[in-house]
Image 1: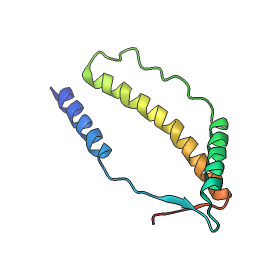
Image 2: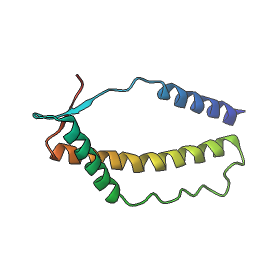
Image 3: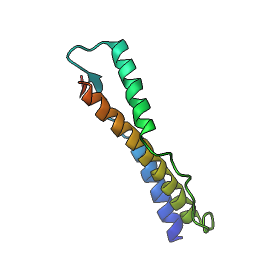
Length: 107
């Protein structure tokens, strides 16, 4: 019963954080041109992806699926594993754009 309560609480926490508002920001520069920015962004994304090692397959534990809590644990571990990969690509893309003279603003 305790495991089911923890699982429900965890699912509720994921749902609530998924509904949280996100901060919007925009890229700009002193001489911003939309077409140039799109080219620069594509180049930065390409370089970031090329310089990030491929995502290794996530291997769950042999006990996965034996209980509701272990299933959720493995699902969140796989999600965290994938999120870290994309966070790295986004971070490298942002660094590249900053190096090209862009900065963020929240209008």
